[in-house]
Structure formats: C-alpha cells, structure tokens
Image (cartoon, rainbow over all chains, first blue to last red; front, top):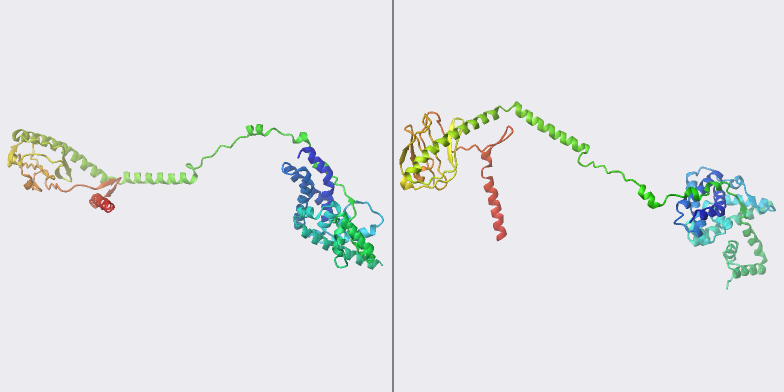
Length: 163
Length: 288
C-alpha cells in the first residue's frame, strides 16, 4: 500500500469508521481517538494489508479498539448516544420515528448494536460482519435477527402507545 | 424454489430486510405479501428497524493523511551501514563477586604469611639443623672418599658408592648408602684400614645395609675402618664417639613441612604401596 492508497483510504473510509464508532459509544473525542488508532495501525501494517481489504481491516481494528474502550469505561453512560452526535439525516418526514428507533437501538447490547450499524450503515454481508466481529456467519444471522425482532417489538409497542 | 408460508415467513422477512436474499427470493417474498396482505404491516415495521442512511463526517482527516515527502526515508541498505553495535562488555572474569573472592583469598594468604613470620621459631631451628647436617655431610663425604680410596686400592674393589649422605639431626649422625656397593666379601673380610683424615677427632660412620650388599665402615677411636660381610652387617652397632653420641641411623625424617605446618611423614608410609596394590588388583580382575 502506497502513501496515495493510504490517503485514499482516509478519504473513503474514515467517515464510515467514525460513524460506526461514534454511534456505538456516543462520544466524539473517544471515537476520534479510536479512528486515529485504527488508521495508525493500518499505516504500520501497510505492507501486509492489501488495498482492497483496507476497509474491512479498519473496521475490524476500530471495532476491537471500541470493545476495549467500552470495557475500560463501563461506567460511562451510553444512553442518549445518538442525541450527542451531530448528524445529517436524509429523511426529515419521519423524524419522530427515527428518534424512537435510535433510542431502541441504544437499548441493545453492544454486539447487537454493532451488528445493526454494520449492516445498515455499511451494508456488509453476514460473512463480512462475522470477519470484522470475529463471529460465525450463523451467529451474525441469529444475533442480528434477534436485534431486529427486539426493535420491531419496541416500534410496535410505541405505535400502540401513540395510537 | 422458496416455499414461504405462514410458519416460516418471519425468517424470510428478516433476510429480506437485511438484503440477504437474491432477486428471485425477494420476488418470492413480495408475492407472499401480495397473497397475504395481513403480513405486509409486519414487514413494514421490520423495514423501519433499518437505520436510515446518515452522513457523519470525520473532521480530523488532516491528522490521518500521510505525506510522501515526509515519509520518504533513506534506503534500508544505507541505514544498515549507519548502524553501530554496542561493544560487548565482558563481565565474566572481573565480576564483583569474583573480585571479592580473589581479595578474600589474597587476604588469607597474607594472614598465613604473617603468621609464619611471627611464629617461625620452630622453622628456624629446623633450618639450623638442616644447615648443620649439610656441613656434616660435606665433612663426612670428604672422610668417606679418603677412607674409600685406600680400600679400593688395596682390595681391588670396584666400589661405586654414588651417594653417601650424612645427616646430623639433633646431635645424631647417620650415614645412608642408597645404592648397593659391589664388592667381593672374601677379599675385604675383616680388614682394617687406617685412615688419616683431616678430622682430628674420632669419627663414627655407620653404613646401613642396602638391599643386596652394604659396606659398613667402623671407625673406632683407633681410626680404623672395618669392612664386614653383608650378611653380618645389617644393623651393626657401631661404637659411639665423643661428638656424635646416640647416632640413630634408622630414623628418617619423613615429615613434610608446608610453611610452619608439619605433616607427619610416618603416616604416609605405605600409601603408595597400597595404591599400587589396588591398581594391580584391578588390573588382575580386568585380565580375568
């Protein structure tokens, strides 16, 4: 991987990695540190990592760094994570539903939350998610389906309440 | 062909939401919804669980960029030529513990030497004795040569006494002929030879028998030397003289002196013989 390839990775993947991390931990400064660490490791291992695998490598490193960070900082509250993040959503018509969904996602465990984020934001397949999170494909499928069912139940519950 | 029914629809709906179905499978799910509109709402809610696309920019990209000119480095071969290796420090011989042990040994030697200088009175006496014995040895050698010369001349003997040692120890004189002296007993039997030695006083010389033959010379007050047959010469008593009374010819000082320590030589007697016997025994056993 050349310097140019690395800079292309920064351009193409840094936003996605940062979004994935900041949506998980809800803390911008910590997320920036994790992203920086992930790219630092990519630079150190640039001779070993192929350019076409750089995105997966970055997410893998960032995910494990995030797990370490969560373990070290368990006391930190993870609720209302999404409210802290400055984001620009494409949909504005159903903002209330989105807020409900974001709160529901915050109530998932870290693994389920990461699965949903990797699937919905990055569009990774079950196999790719399994490689990043060090899970089997069937595990990814089962955990992600459980997360969807939980989210569906919360949405139905809120829907009933609003009705 | 997929078989979606009311029992397994949920798993297909989840796969549909996760975009894990092929185009045909997606069509199959949509056909199922058309056939079963009551499940359409459930699929819609599952579709709502998918997070909408959201763009969040990482604003610190500048920190991550690498610049080729900054990252440019010297070729590794040139770097290798610049490397220097640290000299190896040999700590084996001159280590701290070794120096301490050497110093302690040196101190011990100094103590021994100092002890020797302070308490060397016994050594001095022994040295005096050895000096006296050396002088006496010289005297008696002269006597022996002068005595032997006429014997050899008169009796045609081939007396080849190679070593005659006279040792005076604590006032005792004894002579030791280490090597056998060939002679003809029939010729020299009971023959007295007058010797005019330089010694004014009477001298008593006792020749102790060797393994095969021994020449015993007895010089009485008349300064006569008597050659005796070997069979009768062993441990022959010799007349005492005035100066060297109590001459003990059998006593050998076998003690070993190291500094002022004395090792009793008598205790070491026969050690070599015993060791030799052990080796011989082992050798015989091996041969057997």
